[in-house]
Amino acid sequence: MITTVVFDMDGLLLSTEPIYFECYKKAAAEVGKEFGYELFESCVGMSTQDAGDLIKHHFGPDFDVKKLYVRTYAHFEDYVASGKEIEFRPGAKEAVEYFYKRGLKVALASSNIRRWVDYLLTEKGIKKYFSSITTSDDVEKPKPDPEVYLKTAQKLGVEVTSCLAFEDSIAGATAAITAGMRTCVVPQIKQPNTFVRQNAFKIYKSLKDIYPDMDELLG
Image 1 (spheres, helix red, strand yellow):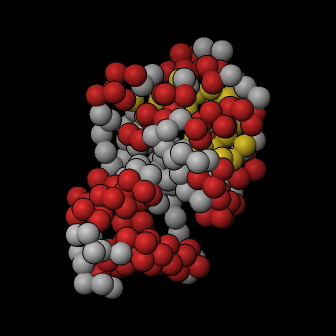
Image 2 (cartoon, helix red, strand yellow):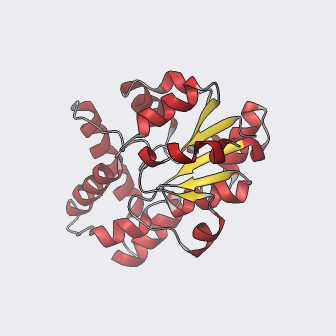
């Protein structure tokens, strides 16, 4: 029996990935580099370290990845400070509210930093629904390591087998599956790899599509 629903944030609840891509492009352009979509797509769902290694391999061993990250974060903060809208992914807000109103515990397991998670959830009016929020600040090993999901279950005092997880990325889905949670995948940028396809409970095009399967998802 499922008692807890755990959501990822970026790319699943909020359409932040296109914004991050633009911020990476701006940061790279400042040092005369072109940060293409193919490179961004390859980095999606990776840890900062792994993505940094990939970026350095792409641009060369002398490329300053740390500076790229600093400038990318600065551009994102400028975007947020400007008051521009960050949209929900289709059906995301409704799904969070649905599980909350059904009396299940609702949690967040994000690879983002705490400051941005708290800001974005508050700004979008959904932070009040979450009984637990776990971010990259709370773990030593990022997704695809299962630590963020194991810690989420631990904080709530629930078994991982009583948790239903929703993810969009390969790394995130791998983390939730490896943790032992019933995992549903809603891909945005990358389609699931073989491991995720074989081990995911369900794969959906949108969070709007989950409701016909609700008895099975929560049973």
